[in-house]
Length: 121
Length: 111
Image (tube, rainbow over all chains, first blue to last red; front, top):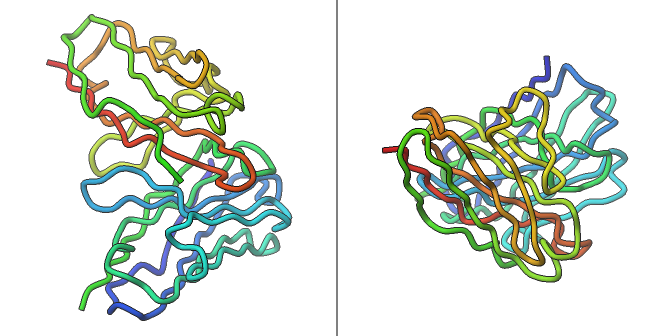
């Protein structure tokens, strides 16, 4: 059974940093691209960042470029999102998501349950 | 990175059929056969319904179908059931600059 379990969400002040983690199991992790997708409370889905199976392709939404860094450790079946210079508009549930392909196609067949990041003074 | 355009809401009665549109452009929906659709119930993670424009994952009801014409993709749901009441999102690959764009979401109400 595929499982994606996010952790690291917290309530922080603007300008601070946070690191999210996603532990993956039930599939061959290095056969798939991975994504972070966020959803502000009561709002729609917003793609944040993606990383291909080998980390050879890394991409970010304009809204987080230069502040967030995605990475993966295939030996540990883990995905990460380092979030720096956090802003109130970054407040959202952050979902770890598995691409159906090795590259970044945007087509996600499994999602975690999400971890909440709240940025407020 | 402009979001894909979906109607904010649709409503219908049980047993009826509906279609949700998703309009993009020539740099995303119109250029790649990589549109996907997701169903999300309140408080739950999204669920994949359609991938590669019109393919259904195993376990997804054949009441859900996807299609595309030009820059507009569509999700059709037939024989509406009360459990279909949810939010629906389209998503498209958008090339190696933008990569992934979502629609704003459509709230389906089954009256």
